[in-house]
Image (cartoon, rainbow, N blue to C red; front, side, top):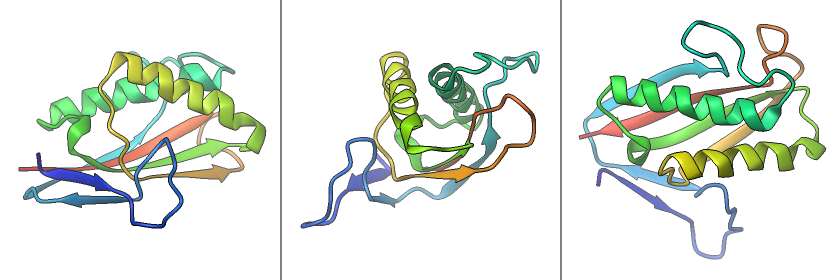
Length: 134
């Protein structure tokens, strides 16, 4: 496996991600911001953060496959959440857990960045993903 996920000793552990990814592959895959659109560009799960997170994972899975990669190759997730408040965390986490039931998703390093708005009304989350493949 070209990606090893680790946490430093004596470092706060987070169940949703590891703090470090070490990649040994030679090909980088950079996936543009993925949002909760279906294949026709319609917003999936309007007003539902959990549902939008799941759809983002579905779109990331398609993008990874198009590049010959899988979630096992992911070294970084960067999430952007519109109007982020701490109270939204449970709904976000529920989306991650539902996606894990659909996909084998290792816990690569991740960041969740609250933003005022995303580029189109109704889009609650967006994710940029980086992977490394052999």
